[in-house]
Length: 79
Image 1 (cartoon, rainbow, N blue to C red):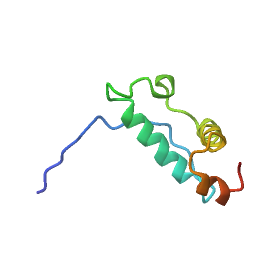
Image 2: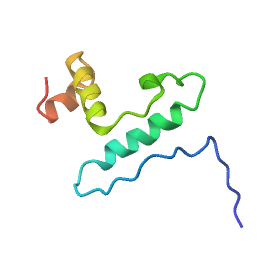
Image 3: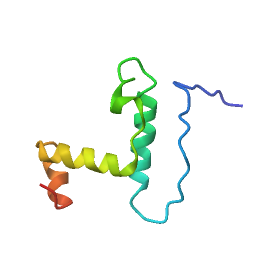
Image 4: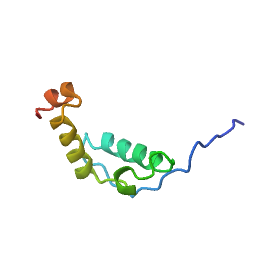
């Protein structure tokens, strides 16, 4: 039998049925944020709460507006 190593506690997030083909990337982002929030360095990330998908989308739009990921912004038609 193999060994299991947990680097951090597994975040518990609400389950949402995925009826689309795009939201899985946002769910992955939510899991990443939840895991980072368990560290001292990022405990206050997003005010300590895991953001919902509309909030993540808004965060990305603001970042694009500030010049981050210009290729992604261009690809998805944002400024």
